[in-house]
Length: 282
Image (cartoon, rainbow, N blue to C red; front, side, top):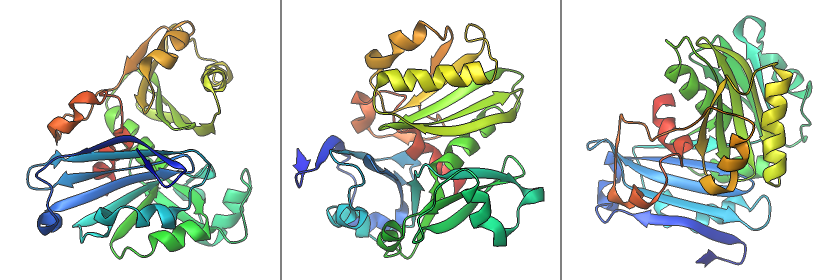
């Protein structure tokens, strides 16, 4: 199935119980980057995810306004709408050094910003820092049509999740969450964040290179430091190659705090954590 000529369906599964008349009992969680778009409806009363919609773009940066217009369900009057936005430019600044008036200067240290981009920051609850990032004006205009939307950078969702998961841990681990042609990566050492970055890649070799380069740059032993992996990827496409270099790889399972409709039964457990974990970061 395709929507228009450039958007290809990856997954489209709806629980039959979803009704617009019940929309005030639902939360909507969405993720967008220049290569893909996905969303899921969460039933507040049942604490259950009811659907998954996931689309991959044939051409980069599919127009977000056009994309939103193709899904009438997005216009429902949901209890809340949380939007997980990936844009490569993202910088972490300690609270002690952060001055809201200097956001652009912080971001420009290692990122190129278009004049029309709008700069945002997210407060990270588990560390004394903020994540500063920009959103292109055309995307922000598309999102501003929703009155109750809450936007956060995908790095914020990712870091809040891995720091929560490892807050009492004495282990040293690498965490990675993959999306279409990009991924977030963090190194957590005995519950403390020591490294965060995100990378964009075009093929499997680039993906492997960035991971191994992080191990090398951080001077980590890839035979001892485990890698916890989640995201949208076919296990057979990368797992065996990655296993040649990293000996301890753990595929993450869906959060056990929630229930999931039967429509998720055919979807691998390591998929769509970027949607499921948003509920912890509202």
